[in-house]
Image 1 (cartoon, helix red, strand yellow):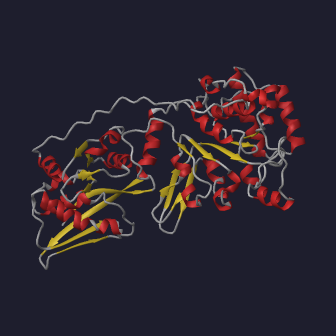
Image 2 (tube, helix red, strand yellow; image 1 turned 135 degrees about the vertical axis):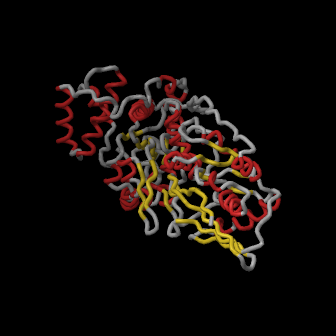
Image 3 (spheres, one colour; image 1 turned 30 degrees about the horizontal axis):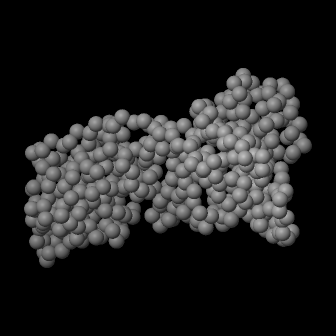
Length: 478
């Protein structure tokens, strides 16, 4: 019996799997056990054809492959290469001692080519922690090279993998490419007026404060939300590795490390699982795919109540914990959220140009979708009105070009002390507005961001006053 080190994915983390290969006399057959999915069972056809088309003989005996531990579900085609090399080691083609120190992953084509696999960054971390070399597809080299401390054995075919393990061919050396993050470019559309909303988004971007933009249709809520990506700084290399790990585990192809902060805008019909993550085989949801970037929730009240309420814990904890009968996984969810909402179903509650035609029942049902515990987790709120004719004929100020500090303030937006006048105003507002303790502390954090952007050394009354201006006042159309 031959045992080959390999690895699988649970969420975005790798876990060790032993590929045990046994070949014994009997009627020819090929069986894979150990709770394999359909894609893993199909490895039998891929491995058999890849070996024959690569010039190796498939044994005319009973071949049994066990994927241990047997109680963990295995999915995907990343065990193909390990299974094929285990069979060849059993035949004496590959030295067994080399397999003992190598973690092997890769999908095989019928012709013997090694195809890329998802989650290579997590598998590289797994190999490093176990003190193993990592044999993996050449196509994943750019991503894998970003994890130091691992001996990499990139291969492009089954034949090459055999020659590397036999010592006939030296593996290609990986040279990590120089990394430089990229910012999102300016919006292509003109954004006229809405100075208050632009200021609110500038403050929100600087401190990563979740913000809800409210106003009638056509005032530019969605346009401003998309343009706000230009306020964010480039990804650092460490952040890029985090983001790429999530995308790789989700099976989303990236040529190398992600260089721009992700911007995700799911449709309001999205399910709870697609938004938060999970499923029979856990996959990250949209909130995790927006990790280190921007998540735009356009038309927030149109999302299902189930999906909205599932946002509450991730907004606080910046991660998603999913516990099911078969697994427990954590997905990162440290993203900046911009949500938009109309003030009522028709959209014109409080409008100065059109009359709202919604009944009291319509308003009650609409506002009930945004329940207090969820609303309380947003840091900032901004009411947007119609643009006047004078504003519409004006120039579009490039507000996003003045964001040199945005997103670079230490958490929580630098610990600036509260001045006496700022503390007094905050205490007065706490009593009059009935702020919850969460809202109270969020107001302080927003005020600190405002003070830091202005270059102040303490949080004074004007900073607190502006922060209070961005608090929710009880209904969407305030």
